[in-house]
Length: 224
Image 1: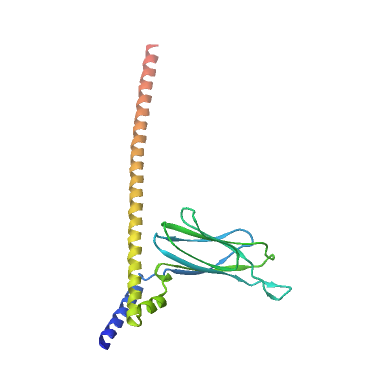
Image 2: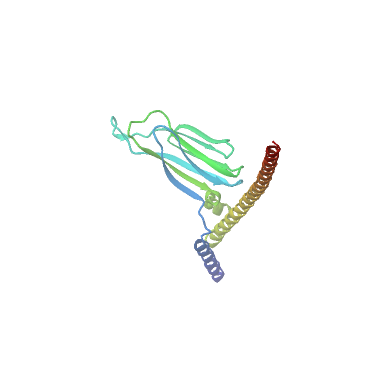
């Protein structure tokens, strides 16, 4: 039994190394800092396919100090998340931190925008830390392990299975997008070809009319 578990562990490790070396294991999580101006809006977008779970945490990072209290003055911000078709998925005002979670129902670019509430001292700078996770990265493996009573090698194999499923779904999504783009390209090429043929036909027709008009003009001139 122990030898079998060791083999499974080696297999899991080998698969994990293989995915990393092939560049297929892309961690679907993004942690970034956004510098938000005193006036205006700062936005970040990510392309997400439908039926993908999204979970994100954000909080304000500020380095200005209140002159009266000698303590960091943390401004409040507003946050809004919209879908590719403009539907509001999250909206908060006058907060210093927050969280949003949703399951994508539309494929496309999801937009998260942040702006400052009220006024801030001139010259002050602050940023928003955004931890954006999608797909397999949103799964709580500790809860899964407790619920299904699995651990060790079996848990690692379950993680690898989730990663493989995520990669397969991404490949299917990319294939469908490629088919859509190819269809659009073919339609565009067909329209351009018909337009070229019509343009050539118009040019030939105009040339013929000009030639006919010149012949008539010279005939009348000879008769005169």
